[in-house]
Image: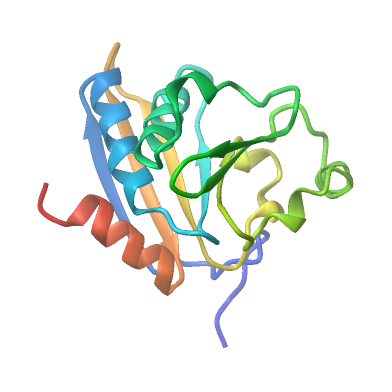
Length: 170
């Protein structure tokens, strides 16, 4: 039997890979490539301190998913914001939520595994929000403009997504 951690996922990622980004534009470009690959039901959790590059990555993912640039805004006060592109991209921000019960009351869990892809910032604040299979991206500042992005996939679909995104030839 596989071990399960606090988020309900297997305790060891199925696949992980680390990549460096040398600029905000490069981080955005990584997001565009990921957005082009997302499918309904995909769950991507973002972790990183303020200024780590999550916003650049999110804007890129939205662009890659065919979302008009003018639609993309921070959902900090709305908790979840839907964007329409080639698929529905739900952008959630858990920063202002206190705990899982508060998240549950928002209806967030109804979107997990639903008709669109779910992109969740500040997943580390409520890690149990993640489904059993998901992709977690941890961004760290490693220089004024440089970032390190650690991608960890739990499950077959997220591992395939990670392979197609970061491990395929560019």
